[in-house]
Image 1 (cartoon, one colour):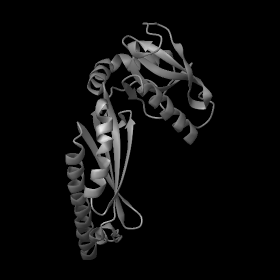
Image 2 (image 1 turned 90 degrees about the horizontal axis):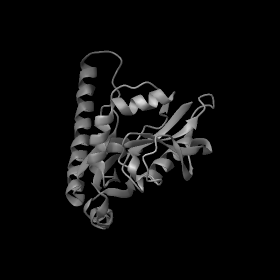
Image 3 (image 1 turned 135 degrees about the vertical axis):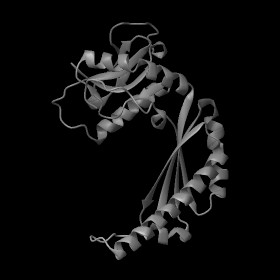
Image 4 (image 1 turned 120 degrees about the vertical axis):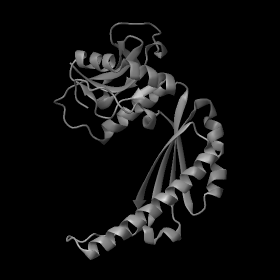
Length: 248
């Protein structure tokens, strides 16, 4: 039997309150394709899974929504380490091995993320001074003086965008004062820049964090600000896990 995996959590936080050694159904929760969701115990941890038929076709957008819904539901009651969408373990042994070889990393991550939530801030920069920096530089196919000249312009514009993004992320950090942050920056049409910031905060301070939105919207000039959360800590999971048997 193959297992579709949603997340890992602490066994003791699950509704039955026991240290069951066998998978058991979590009531009133449906997973990918409407499948029942089970807790698969492994020591102090439990992997939240559904039985999965690998011949059932490609996982689609609805499956991604189902995946996120299950993870979010578990997150309401416990610390979770979400698995990447589409993680499938082909056998019971593959699932158990995944936990066994990464047990120490999982334990450290659960300890670090217990009582923490992720918040998202999206800044769409519409500053007119960046208009030229937003224009793509097309490099010629041949190497020569023209190529080197355009390469320098391309690098200069990239530095300008990154400098602006860093300055804004520092300003946001001072306003919201998170425990940790992850920042990404990309161009958006027609002449703007999107800065996506993930903040790790104490779950008890979510309301306080949200209340800072109005002040941020006023202080961040020439930016459209959107805030969302709390979410499971997708951006703050362990960076390196040992290779396990199975598909993901």
